[in-house]
Image (cartoon, rainbow, N blue to C red):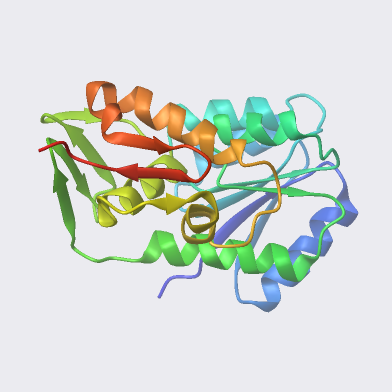
Length: 225
């Protein structure tokens, strides 16, 4: 198997070294960028980068701008690091298509565990195609079609739709969704899920109505007979 290549973007050399050391021990190849502009340049030059760890507060171009720029061209997994822990920052990160959001200070071991979980999901090849009520989801190709028209989903939106389709008709609590889609216990506000569901519904158009809200609990994908 080819070595996984991870780009670490942070203007603090100490932080880059800390993250690099822990990732290198796990066998990952680590590239470093000290600001947003350098990160974007490296991303477009190196087509073999598998994941990006991205700090928010940086000179020249901050993490939000880097994320927005990259998301125009790629759904590569992005883990956002920030010294701020305000809820609106976290929700903004997920709105932009961030896969994980980790506040500083953090445990390097937890960071590595989150990265490994993301890469496992990315590498999972099942050959499975899910089809429900005009929605077609191809896991291998990472493609979704609604009435034969392609739609563009972020990684988390794709995983959320997959989970809904695999559990059609089942009532799914927010806790279950977080544990299965985010793959770890999340202690923030449940609006993280609500934000993703809202965007997913919008992208699905009329088919978005198939995702029903179960008030006080969560959601379920239900096809009306």
